[in-house]
Amino acid sequence: MKQPALIVEPEAQVQTAADRMHAKGSGSIVVVDDRDHVVGILTERDLLRLAAFGSDASKERVADWMTADPTTATPDTPATEGLKRLNEGKFRHLPVCEADGSLAGVVSMRDLMAIAKVEAVRHPGELDAPKGLAGVTVAETEVGGVRGREGFFHYRQYAATDLARQRTFDDVWHLLLVGELPASTREREAFLDRVRPLRALSPKTATLLHEIAAAGSSPLDGLRTGVSLVAADEGFQPSMDVTADDLLEQALRITAVVPTIIAALYRAHQGEDPVAPHPDLPYAANYLYMLRGEVPAPHNARAIEQYLISTVDHGFNASTFTARVITSTGADLGAAITGAIGALSGPLHGGAPSRALDLLDEIGSVERADEVVRRKIETGERIMGFGHRVYKTRDPRSVLLREVAERVGGDEAALAIAVEDVVVDLLAELKPGRELYANVEYYAGIVMESAGLPTDLFTATFAASRTVGWCAHVMEQAADNRIIRPSARYVGTPPPQDVPTIDE
Ligand SMILES: CC(C)(COP(=O)(O)OP(=O)(O)OC[C@H]1O[C@@H](n2cnc3c(N)ncnc32)[C@H](O)[C@@H]1OP(=O)(O)O)[C@@H](O)C(=O)NCCC(=O)NCCS
Image (cartoon, rainbow, N blue to C red):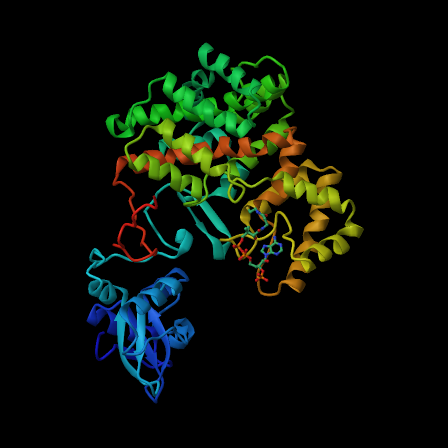
C-alpha cells in the first residue's frame, strides 16, 4: 500500500490533481473531504475522457470528473480479495480506509500483483484508451477531417459539401489520390484518359464474378470477393515492397474497377450479361449506365454523383481505420480494401439507407408522422436516419442531400422533407438535450432510389465512393508507416493458477 496516498479536494481544479499525479508518476489520486474521508477517485482514464471532450482541466472541478464513492478496502483486506474487487470493478486503484472511514493509503493492481509474484509489466507512458477508442486521436492525416460540433467535414483543404456542389466525382477522386484538384479541363480529361482503361474486368475475373453472383452472395459480399480477386489476379505485392507510384497505380485500378464489379454482380443476379464501361461517360454516369445498359438522364447522374462525393471520406471511421491497420502490417492494397469492405458491412457502420425509406413507407403521409414517430420514441425505438455519434448539430451530408432530394422532386422526397421537421421537433420534445437531427442516411435512400438504384445496391454504392477514401488512407499509411499494435489489459482470473489435473 502506498502511504501517504496522493490526495486532492473535490472542489480543486482537475489541473491541480493532474499536476500532483504527474509529479508523483501516479495513475490516480484519491479525493477526500475535509474530514479526510474518501469521497471519490480520479484516474488517468478520467483525464483522458476530459481531454477527449476538449475540456480545459484548469476550468473543471475534480468533483465533476471523479468516480464518486469508489470501492475501497481496509488494511486487513487480503490481497486476493483486493485483486478480486479490482477485477470486478475493472479499476486499477483501491483506496484503503481505516475503520473510522479516514484514508490510510492506496493500493494498486500492480502492488497486489507483486504480492502474487506476477508483476504486470507496464511500458512507460502506456495509457488506457476508452472503450471503442472514442475521442482518441490515433494518427495524423492530410486526407480529410470531421468537425462534429461545427457540422463540418472536409476533403484535404476543401469543404466536402462545396466540392459536391461545384465539382465532379472524378475531380474529387483526383483530389484524394493525386493530392490536388485538376486545375483545368485539360488536366481533368488527362485523368479520365488515365482511369478509363482501368475500369474493365479481365475475362477471368468476369467469369468468376458470374459464379459468385450465382452463389447468391449479396452485392457487398460479392464486391468484397471481387476486389480480392482483382488484386490476386493482378499480383498486387505487399505495400511495403512497392513504390509510391506503384501503389497509386493499384489505387487507381481498384477505385476504377469497383463500380464495374458491382454492376456485373447486379446484372448477373438479374440473369443479364454485364455491360462494358462506356468510354465517354464519367464515373457516376458510367456506373448507372453499366447497371441499366442505357445512358442515364443527366439529372439522375448528377444526383448520384453528389451522393457519391458526399460519402468519399469521413474521418477515422471503422472501415478506414481497418484499411490503415491492414496496410500498417505491410499487406497489399487489395487486402486493405477487402478488409475495409468487411468492416463496412456491419450494421453499425455501413448501415442500411433503406431503413429510412421503410420508415417513410410506414408513415405514409405527413398527417400520420406525429402519431407514428411519437409512438416509436415513447416505446424506446430508434428513428432511422436520425442522430449521430459525431454530429450534434445538422449533419452537413443530410443538408446537402436534402437539397439534392428537393431538386429531384417526387412524392417521396416531398414526404421526407415534411417529415424531417416533425421528427426533429418530436425528438427535441421527447429526448431533450440529445441534439438529434437527420443524418446522412435519411436522404441517401431517397436520392439513390430516385436516381434509379435498387435498394439492395445502396451499401455497395456507398462502398464504391468510400473506396476512394480508403485508398487515399492506404497510400498515406504506407508512405509513413509504423505497425498499429495497441495492447489489451488482461482482466481475467489472476495468473498463474495451478493447472488442474484432468479427471480420470
Ligand atoms: C447513429 C447512432 C447509432 C448514434 O448513437 P450514439 O451517439 O451512441 O447515441 P446514443 O445511442 O448514446 O443515444 C443518445 C440518446 O439519444 C437517443 N437517440 C439517439 N438516436 C436516436 C434516434 N434515432 N431515435 C430516437 N432516439 C435516439 C438515445 O435513445 C439516447 O437516449 P437516452 O439518453 O434516453 O438513452 C444513433 O443516433 C442511432 O441509433 N440512430 C438511428 C440509426 C441510424 O440512423 N443510423 C445511421 C447513422 S449514420
